[in-house]
Amino acid sequence: MKSTSFSKDAYDTTSPSRGFLEIENLHKSYPTPDGNQFVVLDNVNLTVGEDEYISVIGHSGCGKSTLLKIVAGLEKATSGLVRLDGKEIRKPGAERMMVFQHYSLLPWLTVRENIRLAVDEVLKDANRTDKISIVNEHLAMVNLTAAADKYPDEISGGMKQRVGIARALAIRPKMLLMDEPFGALDALTRGKLQRQVLDIWENHRQAVMMVTHDVDEAIYMSDRIVLMTNGPAANIGEILEVPFPHPRDRNAMRNSKEYYELRNYALNFLDRYFTQDE
Ligand SMILES: Nc1ncnc2c1ncn2[C@@H]1O[C@H](COP(=O)(O)OP(=O)(O)OP(=O)(O)O)[C@@H](O)[C@H]1O
Image 1: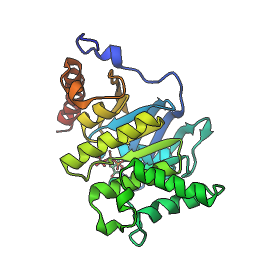
Image 2: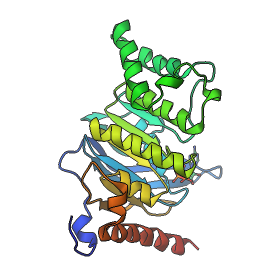
Image 3: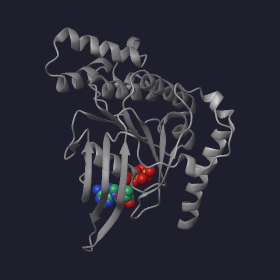
């Protein structure tokens, strides 16, 4: 690992070698009751590689979830273009699965049935045996085999979030979109689940875009960190490349000088915007 001082220029990059997700000149505004427009996102440009893990950080209300929802196809851009694997995104699709902060499980279905429902809906051509093994494989991936026949109100928050992640991964999306996936969890559960998700991703790499408020989480998990400016009319202020190879060891990272340089750089960026807002 390098021991040089953190230099923004060495890490700042706006595009990976391959653009799998491409966001070009994206604008998003909402009409206001007085007939004007409230501009949320103003000219966002970003590309994400097909096996890249990207985090998006910014102050509350800057438009992180809006950006993620546009990529998910749940919101429409006011102007600009979003493409995944060369195809323009216009609506939700099974190739982009979203995991929300507040696990959206169906309470009348068991853990296994929640995952199976998604598999049935998306992998229509798979035979019954394959579907059963896909569900079992993903239950095991998130250590939920023993809880497979429990209902959502019989399991903890961390377990519910693992079901949501297993359900998203089971249908083999090209891109995983996560909106503060660990935000509702206590610190211990959060740390464990971060590790589990990272293990899965390190073994089955795919494009991930994760919104978070947590700089440590972003550094631990992602390849690049997108720092958003404050809203209204937010855009990408800077993009930091995380210089630690995968698989990552949290303790080893935290003992490195580079970790703290990167962390301080990101926190100073956020403080700067926070102060401007005061
Ligand atoms: N449907 C909507 N109609 C009008 N304004 C909206 C709508 N959805 C979001 N907004 C506004 O857009 C801005 C960005 O919201 P968004 O939820 O994307 O922010 P965020 O960065 O994800 O915030 P947080 O970190 O608090 O979750 C906010 O000012 C919000 O009030």
